[in-house]
Image 1 (tube, helix red, strand yellow):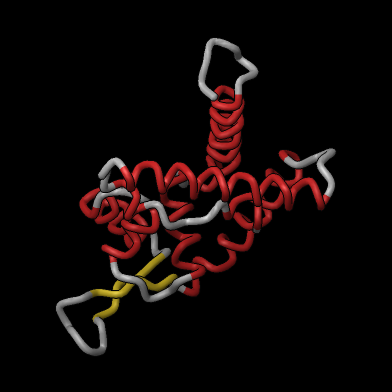
Image 2: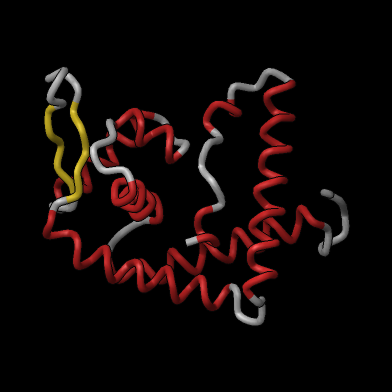
Length: 164
């Protein structure tokens, strides 16, 4: 899989992921957002009311890193922290209504990038690509788990970018 050949599976996966990240970074730059902030907003859009720890797990980032990210999003008026109704020590994260129009614009950006990335790949091929990538992810996650690496517990997100 990983070898000297630039057309090997590992090299191609790396190149595609890098190009997607670079393209997304370029496209969200006018919104003064990083990919991490955008991903955090995406998680909150799907799962409003998560805790900072749950958000960190979803993003596969450290709690402290996500704490700084949440502070920045809160300062921009994108999100708010509300006390948990059962445990006031716990804060739950919610998207502010004022951020919704910008999130809609960002969804259009994602759609445009996704369409560009998948140009010339028909619907059946896209479904097969996603199926195979999910299978590879499960296989690699299982491999990490069998060798005792804790990373496997954090690998829970799906290949959602291509599926959305």
